[in-house]
Image (cartoon, rainbow, N blue to C red; front, side, top):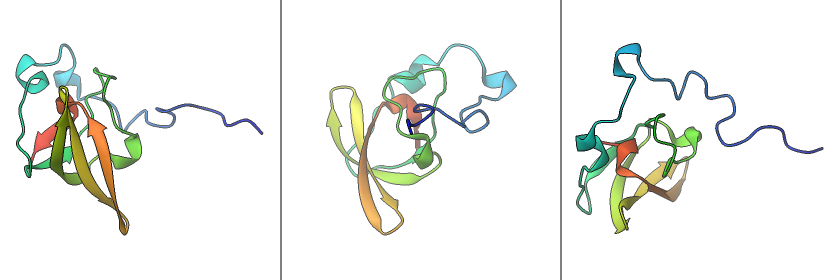
Length: 95
C-alpha cells in the first residue's frame, strides 16, 4: 500500500504557535548566530517551513557541530544513536 501523508502529518498540536506568538517571525531570531560547541534546543518555528527538521526531533537538545550557508548542523542523541540534523537558526533556541 502507498504511504499516506507527508512530512508534517499528525503534528497539529506539536507545531502550533501560542496565540500571542502568532504573526511575523522576529528578525533577531531569524539572524541569530551560534558558535561551534554551543548547546541548543530544537524548537520548531511553524511559520518558517524552510530548514525545518523532522518533527520527531522536536524538543531535543543538541550541540552545534558545523555551519553550512545560513544553516547549522546540530548533533543530537536519538536513543543510542547520534544523529546530525541540518536546520535553520529560527528553529534553534540557546540552552
